[in-house]
Length: 446
Image (cartoon, rainbow, N blue to C red; front, side, top):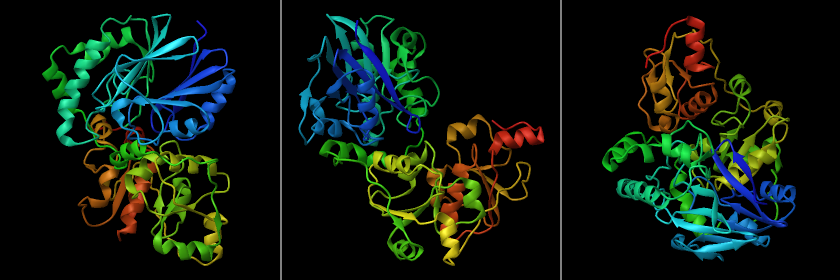
C-alpha cells in the first residue's frame, strides 16, 4: 500500500489534521486549519499536490482551511447536511470518493454535530484507516453541547448509536485518526492520546465499554466542562465561508503616539511572558502570553470584532501570533507597539504592575483560576475556585487577592482582567498548587 499519513498537530487547540498520499503525486487532506502552509509543505514531503480536501463537520474551534486549499486547486468534499454556501462537492452517507489508488467512504456519524461524517479509507475495498473527526476520539468522544443546550442529550444518543452500529464490522487493527485529541475543548476528556486503533478503543473507550445508553449519556453529560465562547460562532463562519488570503498579513508597527490614539477603540493584548508583564505593563492591557494556548484564551475573553493592539518582546514570533488570531477568526489586527513596552516607557506612558509572590506566601486570599477538573484533581486548602473564563463576572471577596493556576499564565490573564475592572492589590503565585505542595510539603485537597 502506497498510502502514507502525516499528522499536522495543533498542540494549542488539541487538534490534528491529516495529509495522506493516495498515489504517486496525489495527496489529500482531512480537516485542515486556516493556514495552508503546513499542508502544502507536507504534500511536498510526500511528493505530490493536494487534489482533495475532506471536511468531517462544521468546526466550532477553528476556522477551516479547506476553502484556502480549494482556492489553490483542490476539490473540497464536505457533508451534504453542512449546507456550505461556497463551492464544494457534497457527500452523504455511504458515498465514496476515489483519490488516486484509494477511496474515501462517508459514514454518517451524527452526534458531535448533526451533519457529522467520518471517512473510511479503502484500498481495493479493504479498510485501511478511519478518519473519525469528532465521532470517536482516543479515549473519549467529542462533546455534543456546542450548538444548543436542548440538543446535547439527543445528539449524544445519536453519537452512541451511530458509532457502535457503523463501526461494528471494522477490524480491530484499523488505525484511528480523530480530529480532536488530548487538550481539545471539543473533547469530553482532557487526557489520552491523539491517535489510536479501533481495537484499543473497543477495550477502553466509554462509548464501547458502557453498554447501557442511559448510563453512558448521564456519565458523559456530568463530565462536560466549560468551553471558549468563540465556539458558538465559528460553525456559522465555516458554513458561510471564511475569507481567503493570498498570504497571511503581517503586523504593522505603530509609534507610541499612534498606539495610544488607537487604544480608545481597541483592546491591548500584551503577549510577553508573565514576569515581564508583571514588572510593568500598560494599564488596561490584557495579559495573554504567546504560547500554544494563546488562541483559546483570546477567543474566550475578547469579543470577536474587537480591534486588537499588541505589545511584544523583540524575540517573539509575530507570524505565530497572527496565525493563531486568524485561526479562530480574529482579523482586526491593528498592529504592535514599536519598541515594545520599552517604547512605551520612553514615550512617558503610564505603567501598572502585578507582583509575583513565592509559592508559600499565602498572606492574601487565594483564587485558583484553573478548569474545574484541574481544581478537583488537587488544590491548595482554602482556595477559592473561579475558572478564568468566568473571572470577569465573578463575585470575589474584597481586599488583596493572590491568583494561581498551573504555571502562572492563566493567573496573570485573570489578574489583568480584574485590574482593568478596577481591582488593586493583586499578585500571582507562579507554579500554583503543585509548587505550593512541593515547597511546603503539605498535601493538596481533592
